[in-house]
Amino acid sequence: MKTRKSIKKRFKITKNGKVLLRPVGQDHFRAKKSGKIKRQKRSPIKVDDSLAKEIKKALKYAPRKKKKNKK
Image (cartoon, rainbow, N blue to C red; front, top):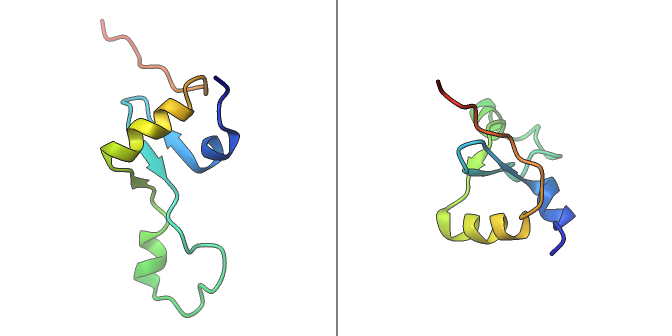
């Protein structure tokens, strides 16, 4: 099964296995939004577990950050 490139561009998997996505509404029409909303949209959003499971399945062979071994 190949990695879905469209999903790879939109989602990021952290080293602990969380799936993050970029908030919508950042590309244009930002002048009318308040500074608070603009700041909130800069940070990624955690995806709920039911959708995260399917995203991980589609990104089966995508490169991921490896966990560091604790000694």
